[in-house]
Image (tube, rainbow, N blue to C red; front, side, top):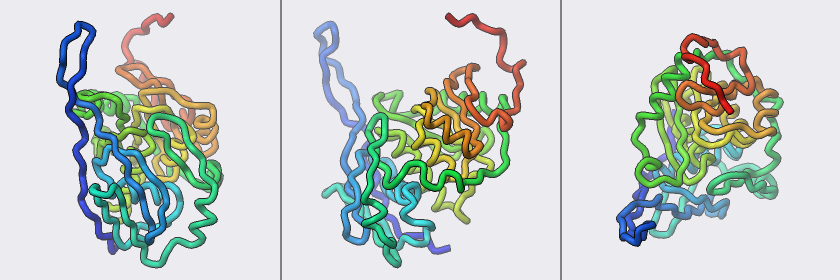
Length: 280
């Protein structure tokens, strides 16, 4: 398999500054270094993404994948990121068929660092067939513990979303960005660059953000049958998850979680949850 040529234009993730606290004292701290990245495909401007810039080449590749603008990593010849002009130049091998028509309709999605998707969010959902896979309650708790221990920009600077890809309880990749859609696109791009286009059949996707329709659709397009969120799920996210048979688990912190859909994929082990705690 011939992979595209990629730059490695990783940017600084935080910016140092001083602020005044409630006591009138000057304090030094760091904030996420959000920046604009305008994507050009074969010299045609496509979109501007607001990003931390941790792995911009993976982000652009995953964006093209999840927008269904390219069907294979081998369609891409190169991705060149230049932060001095805030641009990513994508060169394809044979162009993108009907790119103007396919990008004419744009939907602005919800959440931090608003994203955009081209076309209808629900297009091709019915055609997605997720592989058989399960997750045990013990594996879920292992995933939550790994996230808890993960060093992150969020811990040092806040104001970002984190996403991770797991195989069993092993974390394969952890990504943070100003928007959860950027983080999942970065993971999608990374998966495409792995040997034989890493399959999602035995993987679990984790996000700190809500399970919106966009997040569920992108997970399903990546072939990942189980998604876990520290937050909740939207009505449309639930609808999509039920349609494709995806296991959606939310409010997952410590020993607590809610399985919203695909409960047949969850191997319940209630004895691991400990004693019930009254919730008011």
